[in-house]
Image (tube, rainbow, N blue to C red; front, top):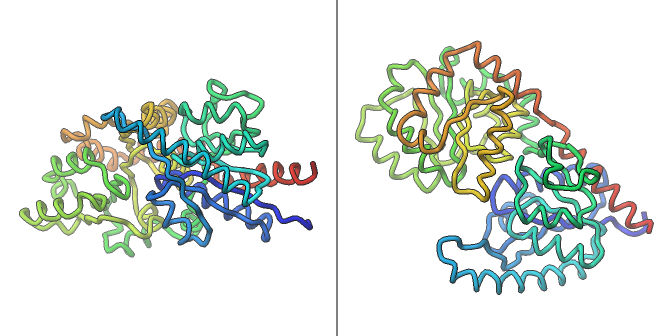
Length: 376
């Protein structure tokens, strides 16, 4: 092609949005090595450092989320949104993309809406089983909507929907092929003969999960299990301080952050996790039995709906956030990790929901839209 293919990717805010965006970008580069990719994120959010670290250029919009606790502050939010529309217009005019891809997060709304107004094809990657209001609005003008769950015609036009699944971190795909359970357990300094529970609360942590862990801490030494516990950076210091007051537990590893998630997943016999779309897609790909604890602090309670999509098929166990916080987390996890038949059943069911080629399928759709636009 004489004219280079140019694609804008917009969104972020959390790893659940950023990791799929980067996976799609890498798949596009494999399909078209000289493609020009540029990201649009939100100022001050994690994509502004994660995307450049992955080797891509990015610009930030001043957009911010609605403040539900203090409505008066939303006057500032509206002003930032209007400013973001003009900034997005400037970026689009300068980059002249053939396609704009939205992966969710604050920046997606002004970028995709402005692209649609300017007559540029857009593609939405809807990660959750329950589409939010913003994506439902953006979906009216989108050319294609890539989804991870069936039944999404409740929210979008049926003829625009493509069931692709959610892209996952490339290193986890490689880890699945490279790592075996006993080697991973040994590499993490644990005993391969004893079951391993991996407890995740996200990079910042989850207060209820951490409270539930502390409430059941006395059960770990007598249960003959091993636990890898990611507390999150925000809570790590105070948890380590509280644990220092107790008898040391060599079967417990407490980490603020796990740099090699492929290794941790490979070591785990059971994973306790939030029910974000990205986390669920990783669990499906890696065939991991899981206890899902949906966060109650997300828009339209979409994590509960994500979790129910798995539990309805017998692919995961469900534990409410408030039940986790009062000490039901570890008893359920210990009971589950020792039930080999249940673990096997959960693994078999969750495997059936995996979509390992999601990034490449989405990249193919983006490429096709861009190619059509270049011909027109």
